[in-house]
Image 1: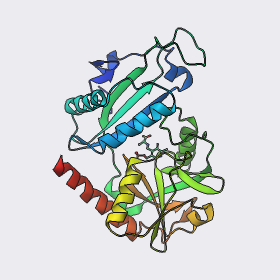
Image 2: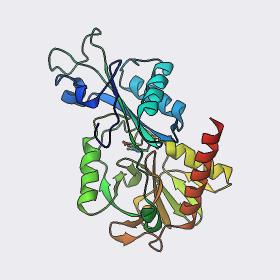
Image 3: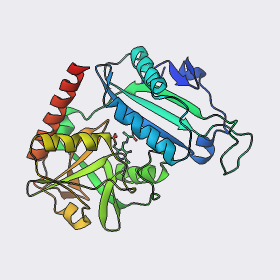
Image 4: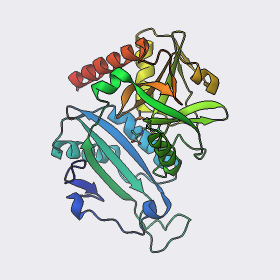
Length: 291
Ligand code: PDD
């Protein structure tokens, strides 16, 4: 086992050590990036919003015309078996499906006799350490060079990878993607903005991944009577924000306190972000008590 991947992993119906899990180099995930994925956070060995993650996986599979290789119960079984076998209480479960292994490299779909490759594993969940919650993180803005179906959670992530590395090269945690003058999301997170006490969120379109954490945040805002506007956010508004947050299954809610070298608001995590982080923690605890 590597320190970051538990044994066993799941591959095409079998549970086996990572060191014994192999995929053909003709796999279409390897040749074309032709596949989809999902990342599910696990707290105290309980998957968070599992049904919603599996629904998004099903929607992405349908969106790329890849037949779902498993029924919902099959996915649930894999998730629970990986969780039980992994050594950590808090985990992240990775699920991936590719269009399988053909006997040649050819762009059109392989014949129906080719079955998809299904791979899944558990990792430790690495949320933001307390120090980062106190300082917030730095981000840059970059043009969004991705394709036009960013609502699908596909493994072809080269544009995200390049943008994220650009951020890392500049000592930043995230790159915010700007398309047609508006904020879409981060390379691996959704982005929220606070201005004059109103929480602004970009709308769910084909140009943004519909985040599960995004939904939780909007539900928590509604439950606490927080003013919200779901609408396009102009780049100029982003730069004039009082607060900016990134949100994802692994980062939860994290303040961005520097954008392109400029302080966001007063340069420290803002009050609404801190409240949202607490609401999120309380909500997790409530959910975990229930299940
Ligand atoms: N990324 N937008 C993008 C482009 C993402 O890749 C992610 C998640 C999100 C947030 O979605 P959610 O709240 O459902 O995690 C938004 C995962 C964590 C990843 O690629 O590792």
